[in-house]
Image (tube, rainbow, N blue to C red; front, side):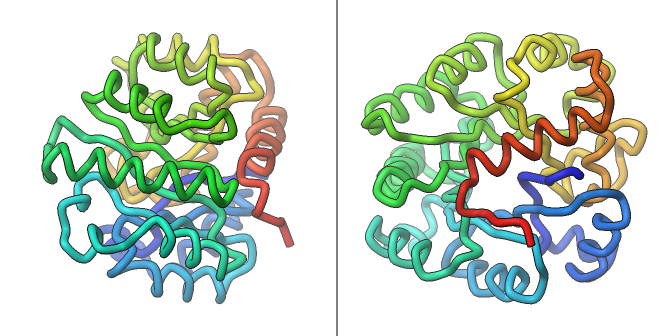
Length: 264
């Protein structure tokens, strides 16, 4: 059993592969028993994501504003209290994010990104839900904000981890999870493979980030949750365990950190 801890079933680019229902069926046929479809714009996406999760068992969603959209006026008006209220109103909302800092694209002003990030962290601490973190070219500021806001109870997932050993070490010191996507399977991702190989097995999650970052041997194709097993098999090989063992370990890790999720 695999759990895809991070995908985007409502993304326009994934629709070329089929409807959310078709993608879910394909994933189930490939031993993916659950998945989280991630919110990037609360004002625009949340209702649709709730609809998807209501129609399918073992499909959950998050609530959050991506750093690319942190400067969007509709997202800026959403308060911490609103995130808390919405996340508490739906059983299928099991995490908060993805939120964080992206200095690579800088699609939103950095002050807006930081303010949005802090808002999401505060909602996580209040609700006990895990934070789904996006960070790119912003490791030091990401960690600094998380440490400033954390009261010691913050649960966090470093989504699509492709950072440095320094960030991995700091995240692991705090008790946070590293979630690996198809990037770890890429031939030139040697440093990332070393990080994944040395990460404690009880801190690893797998994800697709579909429709992005299809793993080898499907690199270049539109990604989908069914492909998460390729990343899982690669991680299993790094740790010298079986695919079945890695699937079990990462699924147990998932339900430990996303403890609101219940498999039906």
